[in-house]
Length: 81
Image 1 (cartoon, rainbow, N blue to C red):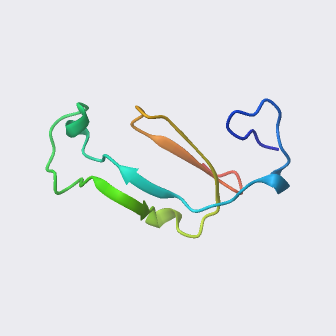
Image 2 (image 1 turned 180 degrees about the horizontal axis):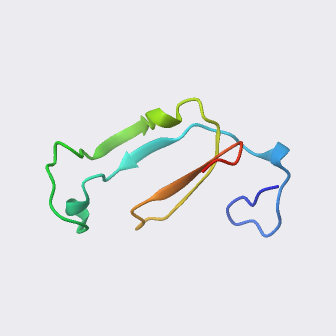
Image 3 (image 1 turned 30 degrees about the horizontal axis):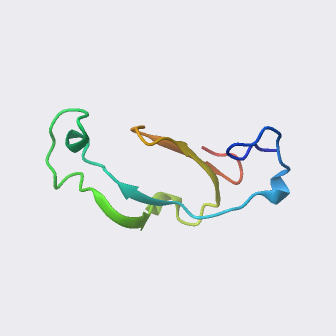
């Protein structure tokens, strides 16, 4: 069983939607007012959807994070986070 976003009751795992994780956004924290200045070439911002290479082929069922979070958690179909 799992809890989909906004659900009050769990669903059976057989109803899960599985997908691939893409990322778009800021990776240079100084540009958003967090952390110490760094070399911009070391952490370029990702301006278009890009696959997360270490998760290629891993079926993802949930991603937890927020609009002001500096992190997120991806949950795989087998429960790995």
